[in-house]
Length: 401
Image 1 (cartoon, rainbow, N blue to C red):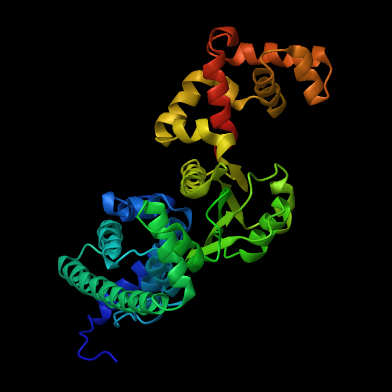
Image 2: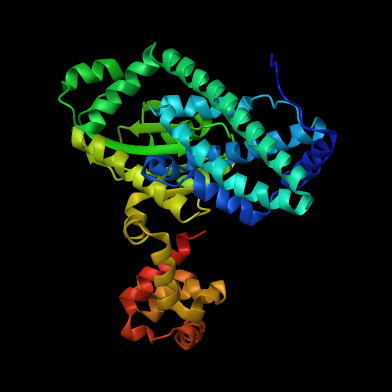
């Protein structure tokens, strides 16, 4: 397949193999810098805020690094075949389904720059011979850039093939109609209903069902449908690991998380119920905001409903500032026993009434008072002086990963 590939000298091939062995086990700070470079820039914001796409791109970035390094351990100096395995093809499928073009593959180049800096550090530790070092760096640059060129070409071709496939059939039609509705385009309601097979008048509750572990989604979507009592649902597949769901109901029961225990790898973000076209649109946007909040905060929660996290969505727009707010407001209370945190959270929710707090927690009132006294000792300011701030910080802490 590949011809006229220049091989380095035997000594440099040995250096390349030794360096690749180091690169096969990248340090955590290397990966942090690599991922930061990949997601830098406004063009990558849409991927960084999407939990499925961002996780897939992180996996793919590490996969590229390991693929190149493993090839040079096994056969140092030879041209590395492109990394177009199942993970890469799944990423192409997701990018095509989201309508994203090949420009997002610029992230491969920014990632290459970050990886190159780390590779140079490895090379300088391998030899102090100027001639060998020059040859090693020159060849490494050729090898890495060629490998990425070949991989990007393969991924680009796959994205185009996926796009052509998606441009045919009912799935593409539903996705296109939903896109127009979400954008507020002037599409006739009856015409949209016929193409979607879903009524747009009355109540709507939207949900996003997704997984970053490869878990099956359809079963979880069916559980969501059954628990709401909905007779039907509208499902759009924007990616290989995500479903957009609309149900003609005025809300989702609070025991959804319990019902989803048989689907541990699946997560669900639920929007507020709405009515008619505007409710169809707004409920979905609520679900999107909820999903992005869970991603920003690396929250471990399986289910989140917008009406329960509206404040957290607003407060967590900047995760670093949110963390600073929690630290300043709660101080040492952040590291308190969970019983103390739960008691304080319930106490605030019960409008600072110790008797109702004890009833809700099935705990003696004196126990509640002792835990609240402990919380006051740990807070930077007495609770009575900052009830609203403490309540907001506790809510952020509850959802933070």
